[in-house]
Image (cartoon, rainbow, N blue to C red):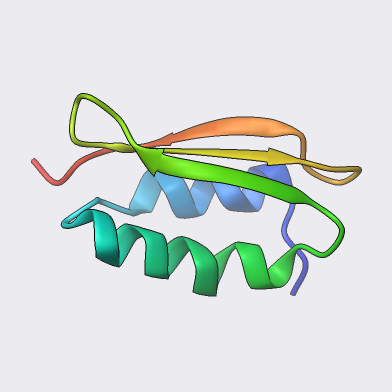
Amino acid sequence: MAHTSESIQTWVDNYRVITNKLASYDILHNIVVNLEDHSFSYGPTPANGYILTISGDIVNRTFVVKADE
């Protein structure tokens, strides 16, 4: 299934970062593999969350994934 900005936002809204390693894995396996011809940048934020930037024709946006509270 190809993602849209809305479907990724829904995934982000329902995801909580537990560890950076797990967040990286989940982003790779749930988002990146479903979006061809896009570039990705992601990594931890100072607030223990995660940032995901996607650039391409279908999705061109930055998402902030919240840390587990």
